[in-house]
Amino acid sequence: MIPNIRNPFKIRAAEHIRYPDTFLRLFSAEALDIVDEDMFLNQIQIFRSSPGAGKTTLLRVFTPSVLRSLYEMRAQEDYIDIFNRLKKLGVISIEGPQLLGVSLSCARNYATLDPNFASYNI
Figure 1 (tube, rainbow, N blue to C red):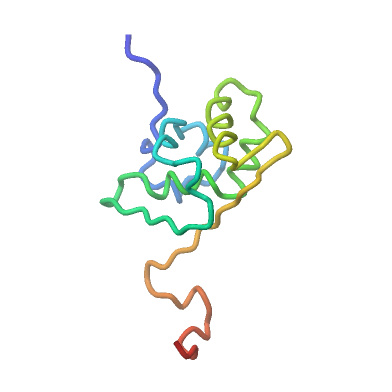
Figure 2 (figure 1 turned 90 degrees about the vertical axis):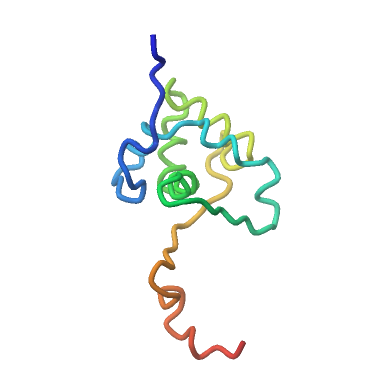
């Protein structure tokens, strides 16, 4: 019998999944295996891979709406493993999210960061 494994790529683009609970149903806790416990200690992390490899899917789990939904559903059997793995990483606790991420697209240019970016003297 083939085990029922959640597939984060079932919906091709994670950023287009509208509801956090839908995203969490598709997200597998095993995707967090590449995240080290000390990864968030004041250091920049660079994720590189081919398109569709799961970068956006992995990073979306750290966004406020997903973490809030996970916190609210933490006692449900389907989400206990994800909650426990993020708890071990210090991302979430029994009190709520402890670390938040934001999605910031720089796909076209850096104008979305600051409309006056070009005026900075670097």
